[in-house]
Image (cartoon, rainbow, N blue to C red; front, side, top):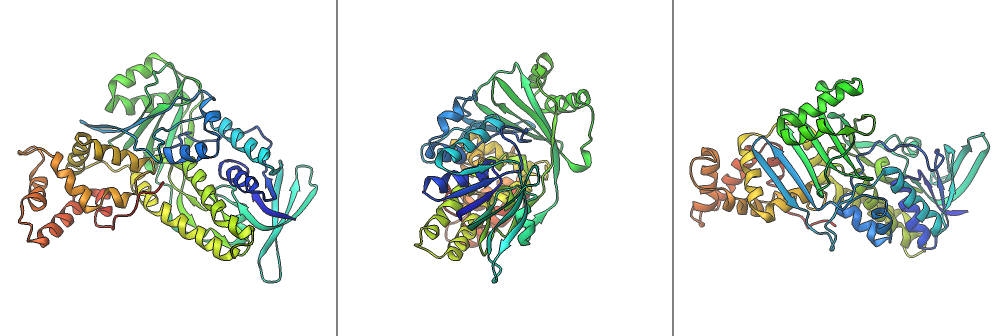
Length: 457
């Protein structure tokens, strides 16, 4: 009899198993794969909230030792507007890393086994065991040679990806579900300088991106709307990606031509959804419970945070200090509170809509304001909640960084007067300003009138 069975032994599953095993519980960790093995189709980036978890768990030094440099700044460029800002700190952590996915998987899996989790590889889940009340009480699985494996536990955790078998077997429903919005090409490039920066570009409905990763390599890629994406041989994809950079950063495009691609091109496309993530005797974590477009490169960070949320919620129940159903309900509530704002932000970002004049003027102002610039990239890095960044007070302060004169355009000048020039005893003027700002900020404006929330670590 186990306390917990975790199905899926990669980022979220290994982290959950490690945390619960460290707390003294008997954990069985199952996976279909044989480790080490497989090549995760991921862009590898771990934002500061994820790095904070690795530091808390005593694993950051191992990750850094794999040959990935720290990343301290993120940037966004669209046409003539260029924003590059330092990442805000999360409990003293203000760096991101982009480790090789296979090595990160190994570090977390080894930590789980070292903590006492029992790992069974090449095991496929076939059925969930339930009692007379329908509560999940264990699993029925098969090894690679079809040997049956039956195990019982107080809790079964599905950490088996967006196509989760656990989710299917319990009938976990999706909500806030949206289709694939874009597809991307990316690969590793050798010979490019590493300067500790993530660069993203938005222009002509293309989202180009690049940052330093492991072993002296650099990730280079572009996301395109689904209708514009075409599968092609590697040489044609070279031309497609280099052309996307040529349009926004000719100097970087020239460097790509002078250096070389060090791997094949990979392709990614991910739907957007949240799943109901708990029920009697079961829970979902990582991509099994919540998947969003990779355009904000937050999948690994979300998996690490989700594992910690689940472990913190169920540990008191496993020790007998709390009812398990109440603990799982609390986990679901905290998960949704943590991810819902960034889910909407990512979904809107993934549409790859070109910025209008007013949006570009606001981004230009953010580039002039260290506080706003850091907040903007912190939002991309899942540090700053969108409702906090786009709160009326924060956006009103941004007008201090928009210069006087005709250049910003008449809409911005009018709203600036309503925010900064109208008599303060006319609150309707400020409310009108907020509506006008929201109406002219495209997807950004959807967050403006939301209530500010506390920054989430």
